[in-house]
Image (cartoon, rainbow, N blue to C red):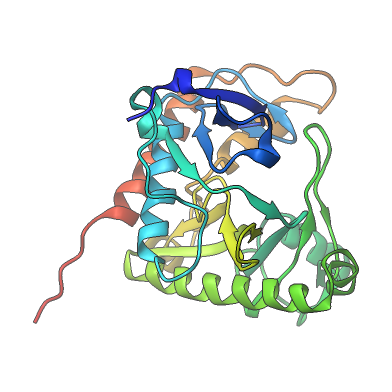
Length: 293
């Protein structure tokens, strides 16, 4: 098992750090990468303080679980153990030629989609029926791609024609097909666990050797997806859309920060609450279910 000293950090994002082997001169020449999920939490394009203790390990475990569950889908994970000191929150992966877009799929009317619908009756420019309420299921899942922004900038929703301009019409069609298929499978798996997968985002790249479109980045975690408790949702009421992600942190910031300058430090009880939501989702999703014959 390799030690972390055998790896060189080459990039630190909002919540993950990327390493390449010491033997590689740069990312382009590396035959593998080490993705380490930190305990950092971000919202509104800012890294917040303090961290959520254990968050990186929880999200890594969930991403590993989904890679195992969707093992027939090509993904970037390699069959190699990460260094022991980061093994609980890391994954060794193959470098991909990443598509410069995020592949978002929305199954329910929530988040920025709900805000847009209230104003225009559309989600990412797609016309929807009148009279929908926040949290309602959409008539069918929507593929709503976005450009990936640099740290500090905002991702920008784009229409399908713009996606075709960026990646080409053939690859755009494949990204849409793969994203919708993956969402449908994950939605049904989550439903069997008593969870609603309201929306998610995927990132894909091209295998450098074979050219095959391959799933990369984190997979269906609570940082890349919006999950709800199906029982609470069915019961209705003000808590039906309580999510297992960082939405509660966004809500607190919206109430306690005007968006100017650096965001305030998160209170201890909010950090504990956020951690409990991450933990609960992991328990529910990765719980072993047995059939009743």
